[in-house]
Structure formats: C-alpha cells, structure tokens
Image (cartoon, rainbow, N blue to C red; front, top):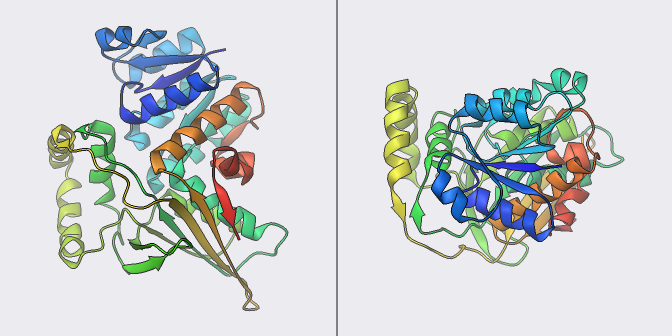
Length: 333
C-alpha cells in the first residue's frame, strides 16, 4: 500500500511528505530529478511529465496518488484516470476550471471503484466545511457568501512552475478582484479580500444548493492599480505563447522568506434562507500551508484505509466537515 506524492521536491510536496511520514504512512516521492530524490533517503520514482507519470501509476498501482505538480486542469484528468481501477487520486486544485474538470469524472471513478478528490487543502475545504456545518439539517438556503482568508508564510526560493501557473491562470478569471472589502476576524485582526470565482464557489454551491453564491479571497488583488491592470493582463496571458512565457519567467523569480501575515487562517461563511434567517460561521486554522499538508495527509490516510466512496468529489462532501477538525481546524459557529 503506497501513497505517491507527485512533485514531492516542491514546497507543498515536501510538507505533505513530512505529514505522511509523521503518521507512519508509506510515502513514495515522485519527481524528475533523480539525484535530488536519492538524497532524500526515501523510496522514489523518477518520471518527467504527465504521460510518464501516468504510465508508472498504471505499472506500479499505488493505493493513493497525491498530485501537487499544479496546472490541474491539464494534469488531473490523465493522472486520475491512470489510477483506475481501484486506485485513488487527490489534488489541491482551487480554480473553478480544474475543480469542475475533475468532478466531471465522477461516473468514470464510480464505475472503476476509485475515489477522485479535488480541492483538498485550505483552498476549498476551509470554506466548504463551514457551509456544510451551517446547512446541516436545514432547508435549501437562498444565498451563501464565503471568504477564504489564508495566512501563509513565504519560503525563500524560486516561485516554481506549479504556483506560477496558478497565479497566471487566475488573471484570466472573470470578476477577479471585484468588490474589495475589509473583513474583521474573530481574533480582532483585519484582512482585505475581494471576489474570486474559484473552486470554493463550486464546493459551496454543491454543499448548500443555494442559487446565489459569492466567494472572496485574501489572495485576490484589492489595490485599485492592480485591479485596473487585471483585465489587460488576463487578455494577454490568455494567448498560449504569452502564458507559457509568463509562467516560465514568474517560476524563476526568487522570493525572500517572510512570516505569515496574520496569526490564523480563516474560512468564513454567511448563509441566508428565504425567510430571512441568517447563520454565520468560521473555521480557524494555523498557517495555511501547514493546514493544507495536514488535510492532504488525513485524506490520503482515509483513502488508503478504504474509507472513500467511489466517485469524484470535494473533501467535505466526501468525508464531512469533521475532516477540517481532524486536520487541526476549529469551528466557531
């Protein structure tokens, strides 16, 4: 029973591998750099590119595959299908295109006895879990607003292709950065957030059934200058050649280490019913990347134990809001 971590040498992959190791789970590192993989002292698989990775999955049949290589809209379908039949797939996608693309594989996963989960991390789960909690035992609400307010430390080093592609692709999202506002957190700190049509939107709609769902994020641009530039930049990077160039240049930029900007990360939701009833809730977590690593490790452990239901889903829909608590989150309702 092996759990493969694709992109294991990146920041996210390393954090997830550390969590798996701490739980005595059999992590196998998958990457393209044989020398660096060998230096870890862990079991590893060398595979460069989606086709090579998929071929190794079909050949070696790991129990669970965790995809951290990014560009999930392009990489997830082929890698997830390689897990069929019977193997399970997890990714950290947060953009709406990638999340929906994996959810569209539901019938294939169900028929193959596999579980495909997307949005497994702070992004998606932190808000989805609060919506699930607030809507338990209630009729369908009229409207839902969710806020994804991660607090993430910056690691010194290159941005990397996975994060660079996520940032560039976000620029093409309609409505990015709209309606900026200041959110006061339960601990008294404040954070600026703005609209971002993301995977959180899909998860909140599925969890609530509400026809009106709005998502904002602390990672969305909120300054007037940046928001004014977003439509132009979005049109430019929608050109394939420009996108590839932008991803390469951004991936090579080196960042300086910086502490997380706020004490906690927060998922927030406000749910309103047709009769005017409103419920509000928060999920408090620690540093956003640490929470993500814990969520992925907990999810992989459950899948490896055979606790998943065949099909494609988001994390709280698959395992309930308690998954967020198992990863160290605390609800304030």
